[in-house]
Length: 268
Ligand SMILES: NC(=O)c1ccc[n+]([C@@H]2O[C@H](COP(=O)([O-])OP(=O)(O)OC[C@H]3O[C@@H](n4cnc5c(N)ncnc54)[C@H](O)[C@@H]3O)[C@@H](O)[C@H]2O)c1
Image (cartoon, rainbow, N blue to C red; front, side):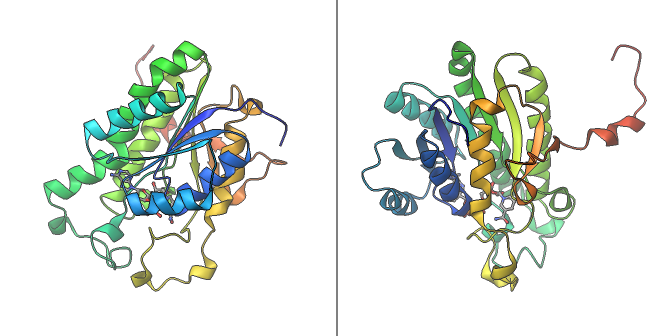
């Protein structure tokens, strides 16, 4: 990778399987990382992976609350004095409802209002609240990166409420990219590209862990997205499983070609 300016990145869900790989890749690339998670013990384990690393700041908060999101931004700013990149990686899946929910999908009757609200609060509302908190600082710098971890289209059409929250985050990503075009702040989606070997996938699925994608594949494309080489690269969707710095494979966020059959009014 070509040398790039060191940045301050806030990574959510940093103590999870993919988050840890992201933190390692960003530190390796020379960036400072505010690693946030709600799991204090897992954050301790993350810190132990990078002993005496002054560019790593672990912070514990709950993204399910508005105060937790505001506190995350405040803590990052208090520690590093700036925030250049927001990596919305934290998420909950249906294994958090019951261990076998990936293979015995939650039925309509199982999804009460509190469950529905919790999924949307963590997977969709938190990225929006964090962006609102970070945006003034990115605008002042004239530079910023937003990277959202959504999921595969197949999953969006397969499993509730998870798929709906991620479809909504995909939609928000496309809209934010358009809204922020020309500001120096880019918005992109980065996903693994299939089941990934982390605690997110319960052993109760019976799926072969050896056949799953490895979290480390998220590191190189994330580091590239934070690099100066990715200036102006916005509104795109990177699938880590098919990415290399040589090919820079990407497509548009969402599936804009599916919009072609809509009937629009002139000028709308
Ligand atoms: N593992 C997969 O197969 C897969 C595939 C596609 C996308 N993803 C997405 O990747 C992201 C990371 O998933 P992972 O596989 O590393 O899972 P993981 O469960 O290992 O990590 C998720 C992390 O998010 C944290 N988190 C959850 N709720 C939180 C909250 N309210 N506040 C703060 N932190 C919270 C958890 O404590 C955990 O450390 C998720 O958004 C997930 O939807 C995962």
